[in-house]
Image (tube, rainbow, N blue to C red; front, top):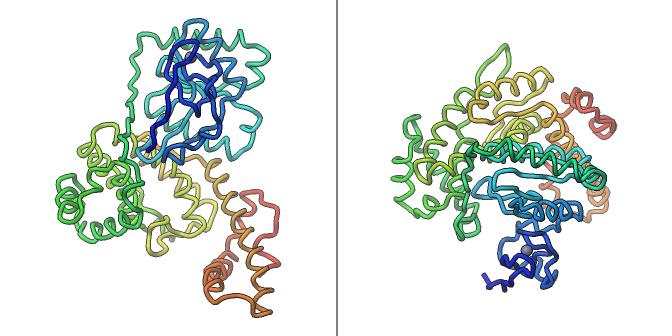
Length: 397
Ligand SMILES: [Zn+2]
């Protein structure tokens, strides 16, 4: 990684990089700011969006009152991903300032799920609106001071997730981890093999690099969990056996703890918290989590969604992981929109097929859609539950 030139902030003498528009400590404008350096380095996932003027205004005010803050800190909630909230006060209180964009349902959902992960990590999260800062900054400051006074003396249990450089996914390929996971999975014949000693022993026989990489191990474990899912019978229906799944998850948490310490355990929980709604969505649409080979359970009734969500929460609340119906609903709406796009693509392709202008591989690429559409005839209830008005499954079949 090329060295990034550091300067010192003119106001508070904090170190400052040219890609930061504002000083992270005092929020004053960085006179060395150079937006051509926006995406320097190899951390391509970095959200280097600029702080809004509302956030800067609030941060400056807090700084002038002698309150310690960090503007847009990197907070890793798993080894594989991090998040930059608007600001952190006293290293434990996250303050998010929401603009009108946060009225958008999808962003709202992602924020809520991320907030849960941050809270599990030990942070307190408070949200204010642009409008509050513009119209009543004094009230916002009073509230923040009150929050600070309340939290004084309460030692926060924040697990600094400090991900070492080079410990990200970038140096271990995803397909390698996948291959490794399925090899390991084929040897996990009994539940007591789900422990750190066995995992270490198995992985050391070949290329032991994942065992030293928290992000790679996290991905490997989620693939294993997906491959180990079981279903069970419940009132004439096949349902996911979340009891079994939670036992394996518990073992996975212990493995991560053993290999990398407490922070890795929290990361694993955070990662699952963030993907759990997606997990349920995939059972509704495809009957399987992404990594499973075959269809396991296909949720085909509204009552079955409710059952799965309740079961999930019953077994996973103890890990601080939960799913809400409203979040699943939003996730499903997003999926319907994706399918809508593919249907349009298919219609376009059908015209091309007539004129013989399409390759065999493209036809194959869409062939699964034909199968899905055939089966989706029984999914009418979905549109109703989601309030999806487009006649998705009718007319076009
Ligand atoms: Zn400064």
